[in-house]
Image (cartoon, rainbow, N blue to C red; front, top):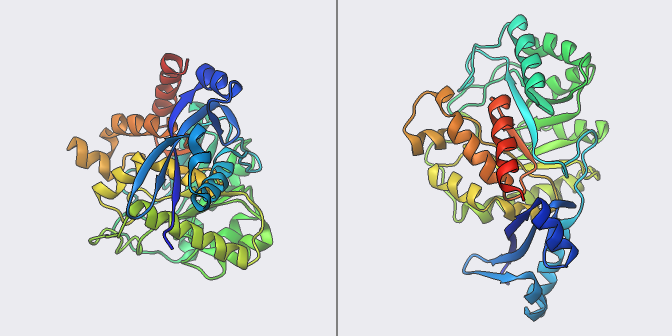
Length: 350
């Protein structure tokens, strides 16, 4: 039997969105009346078709049933304790306490420098601080769990005193357990909870919110000729299967964020396809997070090698993403992204 997917499209914002919703001409994304849509793209592995929401009842019964379930997921409120995805975008500020991360490796691997950067990210408008002690750049090698913890422990102690939502960027349950003794609101495991068999057990016991991330391979191998039958639908299916596994393992809460993993086992074409069609993941019923900051796809398009010169590409791709209702943006340059979004909203969100 052919499988169908639903992607929200043709979005409206702020005043126009509220007016359209009130007149029942559009539907909200994630319970927020500041963004809505009036069309859907019905996708299979053989075809695509865009229709207005007023024509859903004309669809064949089986497709209509699937579309209505997907639309319910797109429209429902998304809840993460301590965050409000309705007030998007939520900005996640990156702090890599490593000597070898692709963009800022070595910049903050001393506590004094990390502390200064944490304060800057908060001052610039970060809603979340995402702290990591292991580089997962393409080609990187894993490090021992104790070494990873020793890199971040002083910063975790410092963050405990701060009124800020704290995310841990780690694949290792040992590091997660250590961090639980401090302030920890979210687990951001780039392996899709696959690296460490004890991670799901920890998440079940702690009931912590977490990011469900897509990666093809490992950081060491992921960029060696990645291929897909259909990158968009393959990753959608991956999330569906992962969510089924998570439920089977006893995690029942809905505090889950989806991240399709831009640059994690994807080439330029894959990344562009995902960003262009990112709104398909709303139909899974969870907030979407994107890590676009200074990524290689910006270099491939702009021909700028230095990662710290890719801020313009980061700003433009972030703005493009919030136009499709992406709730969380993981970025290095909080001030510049925040400024760009504020100006864009003032000029365009009528």
